[in-house]
Image (cartoon, rainbow, N blue to C red):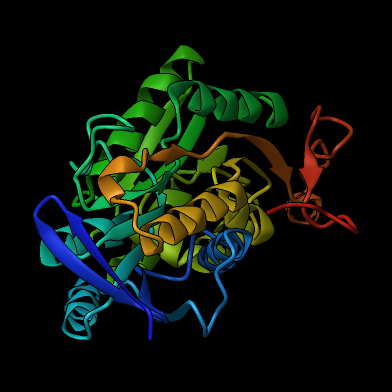
Length: 324
């Protein structure tokens, strides 16, 4: 059995074939399935063979932080060679509880706010990965579409998680962006999963002209519940992930998560071959893909949304759609 002895920042690691890879999801939202598939594609592109060069175990914390911590601890106990945190909420517990294990993350919104990097090349020595970091101009583009597609729009609703730093930052960014368009934002906090139903009801009762989904593990992890109430109230949902577009949002401006996942898979392969995570720059996923869901729009009577009315948009319900 081949053994690669690696020394990174004073830490000696032995990676045997097949390498033990452990992917940990916080929940099933934000394109978790497609993110995993893209990582596998990146590994394959790098010549890695499943079962020969590596094994990949996948776990989900199902929106529970204590479960997430237990999953990270179990990966360390099982001597995982590389831990792959999927989504922002999985990253910090992995970094804190597995400091000697190489970590390659994917679908993380802002590694800088989470304290694992200062720049793409200046990051924690055992950590690298692919991230999103939605830019202010992308928030502006989404709010502009709300104004364009929803006649007379003056109020936007959103849900955020007070205990999550990225959720708070994006909530504030949405409020500041909306001011430029003379649009008011009603941001409703969601502290626990059990609060979600009441939070969505409170949001819908304010009669917003649209709901804009931002980062937040609880509302995004229970997106179907948000869609259900918003559809009954005939309120369009806008967002920033392909998952949201496929599952009921009428318009989303999304990153190329497929490319990001493949990049993460290629990073994992490099580490398996002997590269230090410290030498691998972070990868920011390119954004700007416009996705619409014409079926969701029709259900709420919003006939203004189509691939004809939004230049460069892709309809996720159209035959042969290439949405990630």
